Image (tube, rainbow, N blue to C red; front, side, top):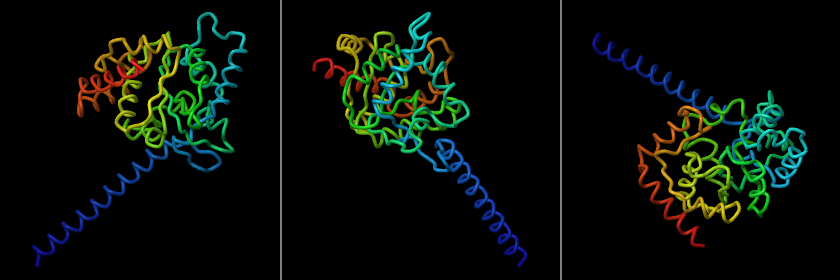
Length: 267
């Protein structure tokens, strides 16, 4: 009887421990999911709803061009626009520019825009605004709340905002500008590969000569990085490299993107 009781107590303790662990995991996952949302008037909106209309980007571009210090003393990049305009206008809201603009009617994105933050903002807007889109567009710099990037990206790149948007997007617009080689940026390369895997339409944007030059440039996923080129290796770089190294490998990614780029260059 004593042995049976001991076993019963052990199973009971294990059951309580199991429930405690599962409850803790559920709470942690729920907390992560909550942090990856943006909240408007008590309603949570997931990343796909952080889209904007192209007309809103055009107006934003024109408003910025009217600033006295615009492109002074140097040409503003997307990174400059985030620091000098996006952050001041969204500070304390918990929202990216997209939901600040669209509180009354969040827009589900149909076009994911892949681009490099060290590009000229004028070149970026010219490329994006100069064509028709399948629907609202998703631009990370304007979608994500820039004061909580790590929380909103989440711990798993393949389950983060970019992945969620890509899974329901109809196309990915790949923006090429003369000031930054898109294929030297790891996020852009990873997005390109994921779009191919999901069989999403990939559309090239930018001046034809710039697009063609970058399509013919040599690329290496192994040396591509995230963040400002002057920065040390970022957490994003480590995470994306880990995914590639533990799955298909750098060579496979390079070969498949190279084949797709060759087809684009010929068209």
